Image (cartoon, rainbow, N blue to C red; front, side, top):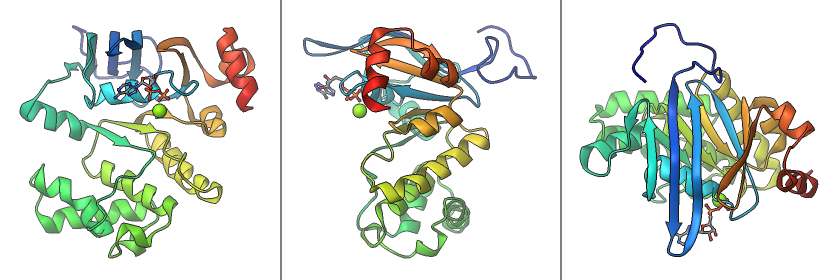
Length: 258
Ligand code: ADP
Ligand code: MG
């Protein structure tokens, strides 16, 4: 991109500034070709839901975007900058790209508040008082401020996942990746996490979300990406994708889950 514009076109429109640009990405694990010429451009403020059968490469795609995995070919840019390979650039990237996993991955021996403040204090050198005040705001936003002094194990799964979201937000990321954030939760806890994600989307967060929650995909996604066997087979607004999946693979997938 050589132009710069101050007024951004609407998210998802062709001229919108891509915050995440994935171009021609190839990824192998040994002989296994897991990402096959993957292209994906996500505009600032856009919510993209990634669907596809188990093993299709959804997690690997997320992990390449925050450089938890390297790529063999192609390029990934965050806000115009190619992914760094190591050093301070990599630490900065990790703060720009938040990630929430299926398993909440909280620090078990730190309190909820410490979980949210540790990275801002250590990585961004934010003064403790300021980091704590900001953490309390974020815990309030995800509805668990009253749990701040507890250890993760004292919380429900839904509460722990909301803390994990707050912990990511504490680094003020430009984009948030969610990899099946509700898949490990008991059914009654799924909605509280989906509500937090819906709120984030409404507030304009750029999000890439791997999920089996089709209600979230229908209501909140700007676009649905359907992957199968390492390839992106379809990209469409949710109303089109769910009403008229074009490929047989997507039709089969939807027939199994709906
Ligand atoms: P999904 O998230 O869509 O279920 P994944 O991205 O986890 O798919 O996996 C894609 C393929 O890559 C699968 O065949 C999986 O077994 C394989 N895979 C994922 N991670 C690794 C790894 N670290 N080493 C070897 N194979 C892997
Ligand atoms: Mg996965």
